[in-house]
View (tube, rainbow, N blue to C red):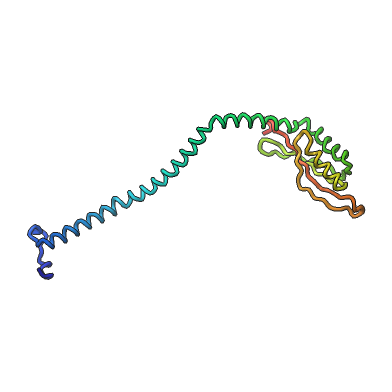
Length: 196
């Protein structure tokens, strides 16, 4: 068969084509059907399959996390009860509104007992933060290093929570054994439901 005879082939008489041409035509038809099926059906399904497999991994991880939490539920309940007890005991360490004045006296007395001289003792206005209020106290005191250490230790031992911030020390020019310390002490007060 010659190539020029390919131009004479009639599609309506495809049953009478020679066998090699029939095989080539069937192969081309198969490739066209497969290519169209892949492009219009399989390609989108493969992308969806990849997306669903990634979702499956995420869901499996979430399931394992939730299963672990569920298996530890009793331990979490016990831990929650302990945390509530600890929280209530910590709340008792925060001064009530009427106890703030006594706490200020305790802080100043602690400094005096340790031999510090107060140049400034200034309670600032309360600042509400979440469920508690913060009461900063700006202080400037003079003394030696050991007196400062005793003061800080004794403030930490007070029955109420007091934290010390922004500490800075510098030597006094008139007495080399004495230092000046600027510090902000903060105490905290639990806000009642009406104050929040």
